[in-house]
Length: 210
Image 1: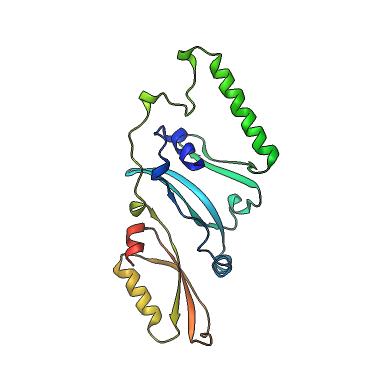
Image 2 (image 1 turned 135 degrees about the horizontal axis):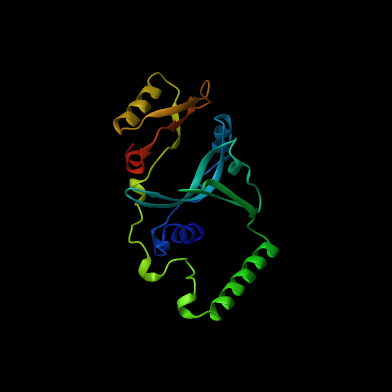
């Protein structure tokens, strides 16, 4: 809901909660967090809205963030919003996003805004989403299958000759290029081992196909 409202304000599009792609953290394990750390990343649940030539990306999912980025250090009840503007460039807004007092402050601010709007003449009122209804853009939300980004892949394989080659071939057949790879040493008691891969930019549909 947060990223959908921010996208509506940022891009002047109607509120479309049903078109936001949402993936939580339930599939993450401590193993994934450890591998991300070894590769120089931290895992954060991000809401992402981005305007592209094909439409507006609107998605929420766990994301690998390089450790040296400010947004990677956001912890606990703190929230951060990273904005890239046409003229202002990149700006970061950071503060408490949970807890009784921050929530109460936000609610009171909303009540004050509503009260001020009630006292203004209709033609002078600023719409809640900053755009009049007849000025909203008809740019569509990009289907997740068409989103282009990089991916993290962890595969459990038999520790035998050719396993890595087969995996690389499968990705190549789906037009996916490998950016980085991490492979554990010898296999475990079941003769299995993990292969962790970071990809270059590719479309979601290609990754799903692989």
